[in-house]
Length: 264
Image 1: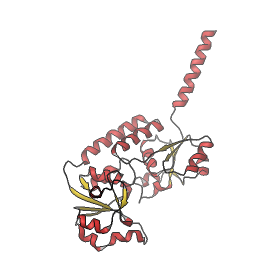
Image 2: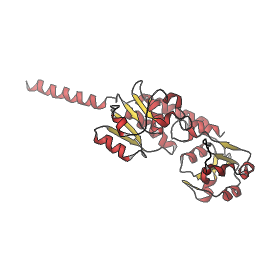
Image 3: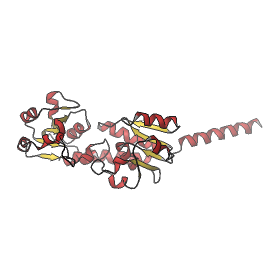
Image 4: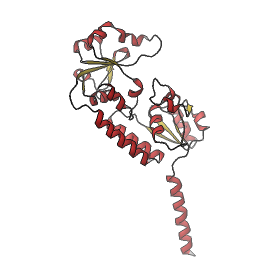
């Protein structure tokens, strides 16, 4: 009898372990960047909702795919009513929403933004583990590495400047800076000790005389913050001025490969 009792205990423990390791059946993503990775890796029917931003083509390279999912607006009440097994949020998600969901007994995993190639690779692996889709994640990672090898510049393309609304630039420690570096350009921000995101006076930009100027796409409306991008001196500064595809630059996902390729 003790022998069979031991077998029963072992079987029960194996059942608990299997339930613990089972892939979450109902997953909600409430962040634009986690939305993309979740849509890439989730099994059919596993992902039930993505953020409303994922359906905006100005910000999301997977807007068409996202249209097939129920959108959420990052509110605890609406997400709770979806009865998720797992909620995936970004580091800058609403703290009260995350705290409320956790108090209600819902598992919430928070992912940091990926602002380097290494971080993008880590995010793919992490998302694969959260969704219990490791094999799919390995394939996506292999494809990413292969694509990166193809688009990474082998030669110096010269000096380039990133210049956005309100006269903001991005340094080497930002995702935009990483994209610029992979495309083979030297970022002028480094000449002025800018590693992150910071203001760069228009006069300084002009005097730096970059070989290429890269600006952000303009949004509909009349934003005064974007008026600096219409300054005539920018048009004369360099013949190689590019309006970036913001959707490919926003998040640290495999879509940065398209951003890198657009600069070549």
